[in-house]
Length: 164
Image 1 (cartoon, rainbow, N blue to C red):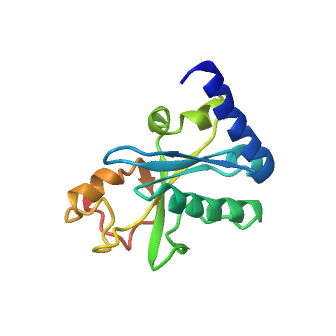
Image 2: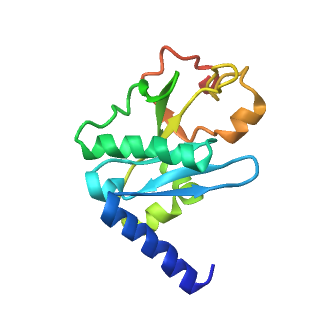
């Protein structure tokens, strides 16, 4: 990306943040696609969010729901599973390890200019069998499409096979 394109890219992000409080970045690739927020930390004191394996439009909708709740002062409890974010299934939140930031949330890092911020991942079960990606019997392509980048709290009602 040349300097002019980079400037336009970051100007769009900053414009979105000024207007909506956050921006959503989608990265689409073979086998692994993800979307994440930029601006939730500065706008609402909320962790940035990332989600894997959903089409960009759907991922943006999920991340917008998280942002709306943060803006309204009623954020999701990121230490607990929720059935209020995705249709017909629970989602859990993983506290993304800082060592993963540079692989996935570069624009958030640049926007926050060295300031400490957290990132949480929305993790969801596969539609075909309802299994989370850490389950040993989850489909390999699902596991590849949705890597879990950190620690999940209060996961007792879920199979911990992946973490054993």
